Picture 1: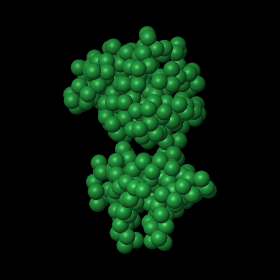
Picture 2: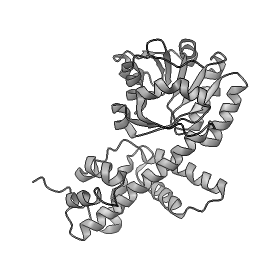
Picture 3: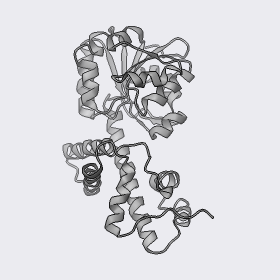
Picture 4: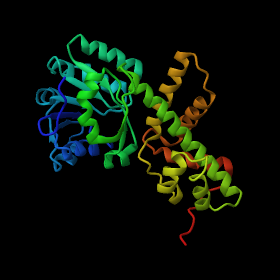
Length: 308
């Protein structure tokens, strides 16, 4: 398959949400033509000014696109968009490629690829990490899984969206398996950093100095290096990733652990923490609201340190 080169490739983008908006914009900035579809008309209007052209429906998008990217909440939505009535599979020509950049369930990605292969349509799973800020800055970590020929063809697209691009494996589901591992670590870092900062406050330590020490020592993680300085230190619950989506990813990781016979105690504990957050705050609440639960258990509210 020939590479999807800037200047002569039309990219179909399905899912113009928190991540899809900046990602579609960055593809345009990378000199790709972009035609987009979302069930919300207002989402398409948000990117029209950036040169992203709206599609009337999935059939229109499939007819105009040389390659299609899906950025959707889960495997169920991906399967509906691809295989449902009027979906992509009914309208894409044989030989076309779908790149699923959603956080999909690995086993379902494998089955979807097999179903599409019978129609002559290719699929690779290529989830991303880095959140909305990484999408905006085009610094996402991209983790494609699938045949090397297809991943190589898609590489110009990945380079327009991210910086760290790792071909995880030849299996189409390997990228989505990698995303489960990554998000398990991300969620664990979030919770452990919250508990550690609560302990530091109870011990009378200066939160800023705690972060200075930890981030130059062995305790450094994405919670202390990113989430606390940018958001939690000033009590801004706007990290850009919802409680419900992270719980979904952790549940996938837990299911994968069971399937492989691995007993992962900490994974199940973290998943239960997010389940509690989901029950208290709802699916769309930012994951940072877990801090309020930890505060209630510690009997201490974290107060942003005064600026000196």
